[in-house]
Length: 615
Image 1 (tube, rainbow, N blue to C red):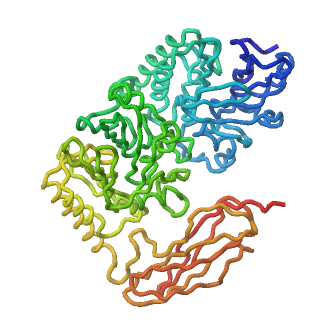
Image 2: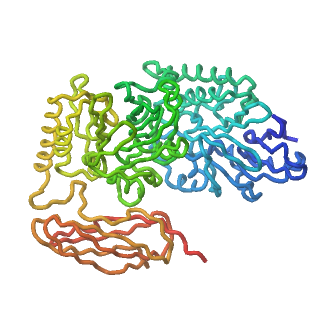
């Protein structure tokens, strides 16, 4: 028999990793169903009869590695439902995409994502981090504990006055890890080891009785085991850096007070700001990757980790009882990735400006960089230029195109100071070391001439005392700086006018004068999908735009060619439908565009994930 009793109704099965079977110990004999934490190669299925267990109803995975889950196809055949960490879902139910797309040549990505399943398995659900999940009469509390992998989680079980922590591969023994190689996520940095320190310190706060690892023996002095891990791994981190990195201090005091009621989170990937209310509520401006230790290579979800690691300090140091509202300055992932988790766990309402809300709600509509993987729908849509209230504060969201077309600057008074939160509009160090600020425009974010002139005029009108940016030092503002922004905005326009033939051909600065929307979508073979073609006349005279769909062989559209007459600079749109004839991931369609005598060719494309028609 491979099973070892760990606690009442809890057994450990020796396999490619330790598999833990948990039952409701009060269930009647003959009616005991179990859940499993991790699954190994599936040997647990052979132990059920001897343990008096009818079946395994649910498997809860701590992380995606193959030694944890290579037997999951057997679990699915057994009828078990699979629950996985949110960050790593695609490495379970869409793992073929990783195998097909993973960079292998000239590879600097050291994460062990290739230690994933060889084939996908169906996933029932992702586990709700910071909350309880229940199955077969067993209740588990789910905690993010990155380190061994970016998406790793720990499960807590309260049983008979003990709290058991099923930590996966976070630690192997007191002060030891199962693998250091797994913690090396990028070529020269220390993100994984540093995350291991933070996870150990955070887990320490949960008053554990027993640690049950995936490899190694039970640890019945969890405080010692975790503290020793944090200390030793901290030494490891510092040994690979030019200067020490006080991770414990980052966790215990992640905020810098800019004024008594305005805090800057110094640990987040983009600057996250907290406004404190006399009601002991808090409002957050931008919330992306909290308590980050760096951004690793790869843009897939498994390379990105939202969590709530700074919030305990917000409560302990500043007496915050509720984070009631969060405001994004724009839609980029490093500013919004943590918003869904904040809403799900804290009940925070997401108030999103009207020019940002559509892009966050439909990230597949346009071909824009830095968008989050999932739709984020506003709880309240904020009109632009109109003041609104939150407790004792009055706030206005001002349209602020430049860094991206869909962005705002928030204006509010905090402690007698007029503060403007500018997101990523300009890049700078607050004048430190004499370095000048740079206008942070990106063409694919739909930057336009005049954007920085307008934002400079906005700041002049508001006359802020403090400008709080998205990645750089907050800046106390004087007239000289406002003059500099106005001059820089004019110079940006002048440079583009000198470099581009705008007098004779006014194609957008992003190089596109026509777009096919939505840019991405899911479809079914044989079922028509609707599209909008937006086209603008870049010529100085009236012209006819001719738009011809370009489709894979056998596909059909609602027209062979579409025509629109446009005045100079005028934009209009036409509707068309496309009927895909073949299935496949990221099937391509395009539009061939001519405007007057200007032939732009296959100027814009769109991508479809096409499923086979139901038989």
